[in-house]
Image (cartoon, rainbow, N blue to C red; front, side):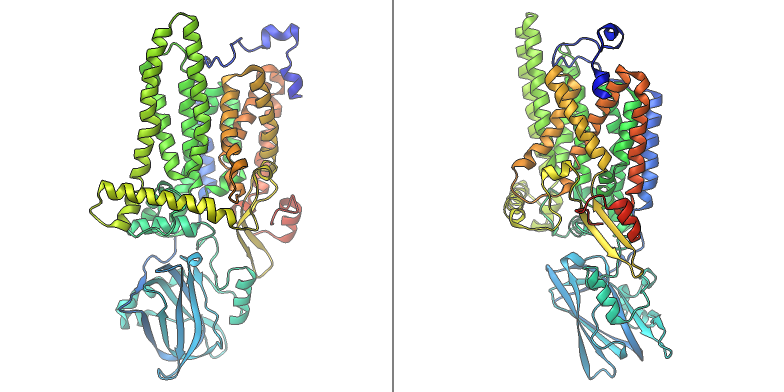
Length: 630
């Protein structure tokens, strides 16, 4: 149908053909936002925001911590009476080394101690509720001793689970401990935040956690960390305390953006996810504006923005604390300003071209300081920039304005060096001030900042070039698998006692992925046929974000396709616009596609948001391919 619609019949050419423009003319004036457009853009953003924040996680997790130090590596507690200790719930904080543990010992009389193994607090187990594997519980206990095996470690809360004479499980009242041990008060001041233990004995409970591949972990995605949050959110928390961040495999700006959420709402799932969800909402209006500027079509802009907003990859990636969200936000913004620059016309005065060029360069610098993915996107910017300057030069030369163009080109190249090299380097380097300050201390000299930044670049390059190249992961995938939505990445997978499963996975909406890929082929075909500014921008953006992954040797995952989803959405909007412009009566199919995309998003929402599913729902509605881990 689409192919038939875009082939103009000779007798219909006058009324349906687009205005005749030279190839790579870049002369089309950007479509302006109207009041109706702002209503749609903000309305879609509001609806998405309400849905997104509904699955943001709890704000109730322990915020105060007791730290074991070299001078005081252990604590000993007298419960005041002998109880039948069934289990201990504890909330982990950061530790002084990669894999720390608490050595747990119990005693009934304070003389004869029995070691009960370790309460692990590994790097991947920070800020979550855990239980130890007690060897002979329940057992009579009055005295409890914990000893840190690291230089310093932090513990957020200790909750003691006991059994009464009838064998009923209950929580021990720790109010007397807070008064008796004021130095340990942080361990007993937030007892109400502890998760409810299922009615299982110690052994069965631990075996259930092992089955979930999370030994001892009794947190879920609502009250604990998942996946890469142990890197990015933890580093953000360390920034709030001026501690050296443990994670340095990505530039620091994305983790610094997470910090305000933590300061506002505490070190809780809601706090460390708040800014990511907010930026997931904030990226929608710029996308709407870009679509409207490209096509001057309110229906295409509203449908395209809704498709991108309610797309599973967008929902998942902006829903937990990773830095990808911020890179995608700045990629959208920098392409928006680059389009405003290249569509300014070939006779635009130099000063008129400065604002969009400056804002594009600034956005590029902020994106690169968030994640190196923005460097890939910059390849597309460079292609658009060069094509504009070449075409402008050809046009002005043919008009006898070679001297004027030469002056314009020299001035443009000079400011571009500032906008796209100097300013991004300054932004990138300044983003390292909290990191280098934590390592070098205060006052921080410019030499320290430059040295610390350079050393971190070497460390990052080593990680991505060597460590990730040799690493193996069960959910790793390659670029051509992303294009067909073959291999999702499971961030969280928890089986409940009743057999239900809660999953959070990165994958794309199949209709958007496949439909967008088909639309991208039409865009590329149109680009080589007519070379319009819209097709040039869409093709440049998509290929710049996908092609590097064809050459990179390190292992990769489907979330690396997230930035490319911007341009798949734009490709769909290109097709939508052509359908409505060439054959208005087929506008209904644009609505049908958009409606089906939204319906599919809702059907696949459980594995995107961590909503518990039954096996039959996963089998019949979610597990589309054998490779999908649902």
